Image (cartoon, rainbow, N blue to C red; front, side, top):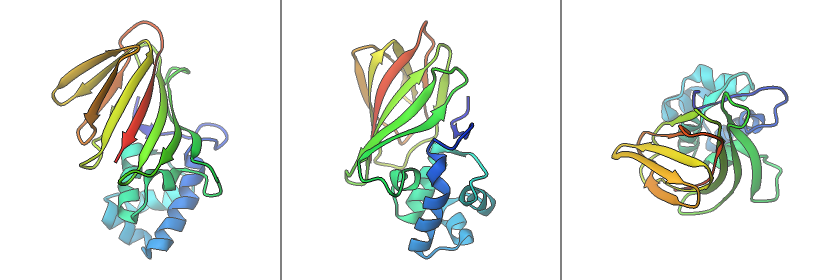
Length: 189
């Protein structure tokens, strides 16, 4: 499965707010679509499609757009009218119905902190692109067993255990075990 955000059915996932937020943040930064494309490395066509609500995008590409806008990932994906730090937005779906990532919330850190609830069905895999330098993840497995592939080698994390690592590297989550794997992911920048 790709690491792209996908819209399926009614827009109840993070893509529901990306277009509106991207346009608002781009105007706030005083950037044209072409200037944002150059600053982020994302094509102008992709930015036009995102603002129009007509495309899917990877989580790492959203991070690159946020960086270019001087914004956070959460500012791009969350409901701009929400008064709470709770986000509760579906950000990724796998092939298996039980495979999903739910962005639970965010609080300020040096730059940003995010709380996610993930589940992976049997045989499911999520490949991530590197985050910017200085980003880290803290993952706690609550059910099943999670395999995390890092540059220094794979780490297997059973239920009740955790791992902390720099996410400024290619990495992947996989469930090569029987049953569903559920884990909590904190991303800190």
